[in-house]
Length: 269
Ligand SMILES: Nc1ncnc2c1ncn2[C@@H]1O[C@H](COP(=O)(O)OP(=O)(O)OP(=O)(O)O)[C@@H](O)[C@H]1O
Image (cartoon, rainbow, N blue to C red; front, side, top):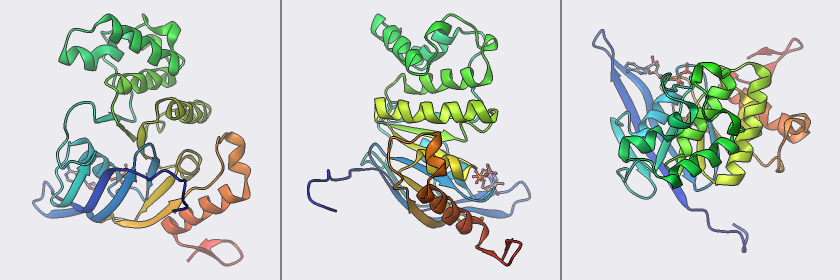
């Protein structure tokens, strides 16, 4: 590392982590095998790979929702999570509680722990501003579009000030234009909050646009296949996708997943 560059501090470490499920038939299913990856504080890392390769399983391990059956996981330097504030997760579907207003949904994680204070309310309002929903605080979830609901979910995920945001295909259920909008908003949210973000996505373009590094997993059993440093200059925007370096990185990831193209018609090998 060149002198003068800040030392990168690991915040997530997967060391030879694996998960074997018992299927309903009783057979073992190796979902993730020998997965090692270090993620540094304030990074955005995307996890990509073929369907069923174990991306969500890795995320669930880091969220504490799935125990590794082999290997180890460290979060924030410890083997066990120290509290709610370390990790928050955003799913593909917004998962707002339909009987609570947007403000009360954002405050919900606080309410599970204690009575929200004035400071919590003003923080919730700041977060709603951050995601562009400041005028929607008193609305009910059904009055919001899908994109707005996902913005509210992102605001809610930040209310306990987690160190790490785990996002499982967070824009996968949105139309293409809303998706683009939220991708760029996520870059703004990251610039403001400096959270470490691990993003599972099926979109190579999204991974390259948003990430510092892209971890490519092999087909099941999922292992680390490639770790791609995304050195496309920041700040990035929609126009970044036309840059030759962006296109070359996207192609490398595509080749990792599908194999290189061969022949005049560009068929895969
Ligand atoms: N609870 C479970 N019991 C048994 N098998 C499971 C369980 N959860 C996941 N699997 C299997 O583990 C493998 C990995 O699943 P996972 O959802 O992690 O993959 P993924 O890469 O996120 O998939 P996708 O890209 O399609 O969302 C799949 O074959 C899946 O069927």
